[in-house]
Every structure is written in C-alpha cells, then in structure tokens.
Length: 310
Ligand code: NAD
Ligand code: UDP
Image (tube, rainbow, N blue to C red; front, side, top):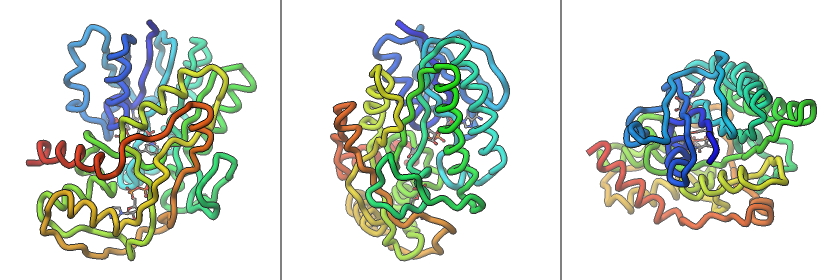
C-alpha cells in the first residue's frame, strides 16, 4: 500500500481521514502544527504500526517520501482563521508552495481541501464549480477566501507546468464528532450552548443559510475524488439540503431537549447570506451523494459532545 501524507491530520476532518486511511491499510504520516488540531483526535492512532505523527508547520519546508498527499492544513473556523490572518495567508500561499514542491519532487498525487468560501457571498445559487465567486478581497474573511483561491491557482499552475497530479475538492460546511467545542463554528457553538443551557447565539436575523454535510459523507467523497484517475476537479462536496441558522438552532434545541433561548447577536461583516452546493459533478463523476440526514448527523454529534463537555 501507499505512503500517504495528511497535513492538518490532527484536526477535525484530518483525523477522520487518517482513521479511514489506516483502516484501509495505507501507511499514514500525519503532519500538524496543532494550531487548531488536538492530540485527542488522533490519540487512538498513536501506537498503530501504520501511523506516524510529525509536528511541523507547512509554512516551513519539509522533506518526506510519499505517494499521496491530502493537504488539509489550514484553520477552518472564521474565529480561528481571523485570529492571525497573515499566518492564515502564509499557510495557503507559502505553505502551499512547500506542499506542491513536495508533490512535484515525489511525483505524488495531491488532493487539496478547498472550500465553498471561494464563492464568497454568492450571487449564483446553488453554486456550481463554474461560478467564479463574489469575494471581498480586503474584508475580514479574505485571508481565508483569497488564500484558498490562490492555492487553487497554484495547484492548476503546478499541474500545467510540471504535470503534478492534482485533485481539488471544494468542501461545504461539514460537521460531526471532534469539531473543537470552542472553535466558534455554528454547529459547535449551538450544541455546546444547548447542552449547557446557555443562550443560543444566532448572528443577525438567522435567515442566512448553510448546507451541512456529515463528516463520514465528506470523507467518502474526498477518497473517491483522490482515487479516480481522470479528473482534477474542482468538485463540490457537500449536502445540498439548505437550512437557515434559525432552523438549525431550533433543530438543535429539539434534539438536545434543551431549555436554552435563542438570542440575536450582530451579524459578522461579509457573512455569506446563502450557501448551497450544486453536486451534479460529484454525482456523475464520483457516483457520490450524502447519505446522512441532518437529524441523524446532529444526534451523533450531540452524543459525542455530551461525552466531551459533560
Ligand atoms: P481544523 O481547524 O479542525 O483542522 C485544520 C488542521 O490544520 C488543524 O489540525 C491545524 O492544527 C492544522 N494546521 C493549520 N495550519 C497549519 C500549518 N500551517 N501547518 C500545519 N498544520 C496546520 O479544520 P477542519 O474543519 O478539519 O478543516 C480541514 C480542512 O478542510 C481545512 O483546510 C479547511 O479549510 C477545509 N474545509 C473545511 C470545511 C468544514 O466545514 N469543516 C469547509 C471547507 C473547507
Ligand atoms: N453563526 C451563528 N451563531 C454562531 C456561530 C455562527 O448564527 O454562534 C452563523 C454565522 O454568522 C454564519 C453561519 O452561522 O452565518 C455559519 O457560520 P460558521 O462560522 O459555522 O461557518 P461559515 O460558513 O460562515 O464559514
């Protein structure tokens, strides 16, 4: 089996990916700087004979011999990526050059975790891969959005100039066990607030929408994109069922049986108003579509949070 590098492997999605790769017999190197990743997410893998952990930051060059690379290293929650925006930009630019250089030297196939944020606050709905997006290049989200856009550009150019085998996945909001309870994302916030009986903080009027994909569905889509031989992407992977944040808050209150009240807080600047993937390409090319409905995925996630935060 191949040696597979997962950058950001100690994070929420990276750790689930490491699990799946180890399970199917790959040798996995997990590289992480632990900015938002947690040892807890991978502790169960540390003694596995096919798992290796490297503490490293992709902004600094590194040399490994690998057959495949999944590049997930980058903070994903708005609070985390805005904490040190210049570092976020460096991760998606300087870090990306290092990762692409590694792919080129090793002749490794590389999948990069891009995002629905490349579409910004979209004016086309639902978002197809052909849509170029509506991103504020100087707003508070730009360190992440523009970073992910230049990372896609870097990949395309390494592909055309050097024949690097690239796969670009555009991930829409994904949730599940191991999302850091303190990361500030909407599902982690609402579930922890509901379990603790705190107010549920809906930003703005709560009419903005997101489409939530359960982590096991997402990882399956990611593996299918990496394993097929013909398409570079970008391919959207997400759940096309759209919910308002108010609907989400109500669903979480009902699922937890919480007494929490919904309160409205200011809407963050440039918060996208609608987001929903067109997954025609994923259906046709990868024969993929999500299987876990929100109610079921929320229940799994709530069960995990109850153990995690008591
Ligand atoms: P996460 O924050 O849990 O994981 C990111 C991981 O990358 C963490 O372990 C972090 O410590 C590590 N990291 C960050 N900067 C690094 C650096 N410079 N060098 C090495 N490691 C670094 O987030 P996640 O939700 O697991 O997201 C994983 C990837 O998927 C990210 O690239 C993110 O942009 C992308 N993505 C996620 C979602 C989602 O809804 N979860 C949506 C779109 C895109
Ligand atoms: N949000 C909210 N309350 C919270 C956290 C987030 O209403 O406590 C909203 C946020 O304004 C956005 C949506 O939930 O409209 C999703 O936010 P998240 O940070 O999870 O991810 P995004 O999709 O914005 O990157």
